[in-house]
Length: 339
Ligand code: NAD
Ligand code: MG
Ligand code: MG
Ligand code: MG
Ligand code: MG
Ligand code: MG
Picture 1 (cartoon, protein in one colour):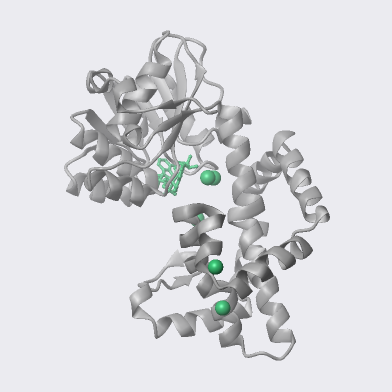
Picture 2 (cartoon, rainbow, N blue to C red):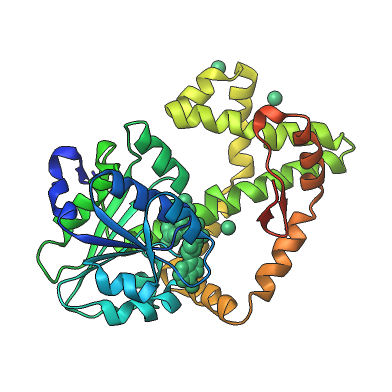
């Protein structure tokens, strides 16, 4: 069983006694900075010149410094920039990392794959909320907290875990529970989950289902509803009560179909492919390619993004969602949200 920490296991006064720099003001950054501020923590935000986040942070009453100045000022520096940018941003943080300070992350990628190698005389820890940043903020303002993972990579002071738990309490996560892990376990399971199931697996399953129906002559609008739109309804049931509650809620016809068809789709070969993905994650093959792709202009990334956006399910979906304002539909163009 994972060791789990709750409010009573964390001392908020530890982080309240520190100066905390939040580097980056995106999805996670804004949530951590605002939750800590509301928890009585001395927080400043570190951003590059001309960053879009700077105005937002200032409007919320936060002081904004350059990355280097924020890192020099703070005792605790939380890195919340995109993972592919963190090694570059770290070069500006590094001069500020004096003995006894703490460097923190919300995902272990750069430490696990050694694109960042911090000095030995500082603490290195991780608090990774298991939720998108906007939920980290929303749930906190409603008096709750989202669960998180905590890990310590370097414990130079002997207090790294206590301090990380205090930080987790400051952003609300000990209200829901903070599970102890390692940078390696967090990074490898996170990458596997998003590749095999959450993002890669699900997108591929949805597209294959849509294509199968449309190629057989069924109307694309019906195919969209059956394989994409309704997916949310099914996932919501799983989220609340596991597979058993989902199966309780669907018809017996659907439940029987689930049992007999699932294993015909996710076969032993699919599981073998999953083990292949996991291997590529563990031995660094995935990380190496992703880092190379980022260092060489992201041409392949851009090509695939464009190709995927042109899939017929995207066109039919966009048209159908326009007539469903209750969904609060979002329109994305060239990788950016336009509404
Ligand atoms: P994001 O893309 O939403 O925001 C990144 C922010 O970094 C931007 O808003 C910008 O202000 C800043 N930034 C970008 N380039 C910079 C630079 N060169 N110098 C200084 N600042 C720069 O990122 P995110 O999704 O919040 O991810 C941050 C970290 O949190 C990552 O390690 C990610 O893996 C982790 N994480 C994210 C989520 C999530 O739901 N998004 C969940 C758990 C963990
Ligand atoms: Mg994840
Ligand atoms: Mg991830
Ligand atoms: Mg149905
Ligand atoms: Mg049923
Ligand atoms: Mg993105």
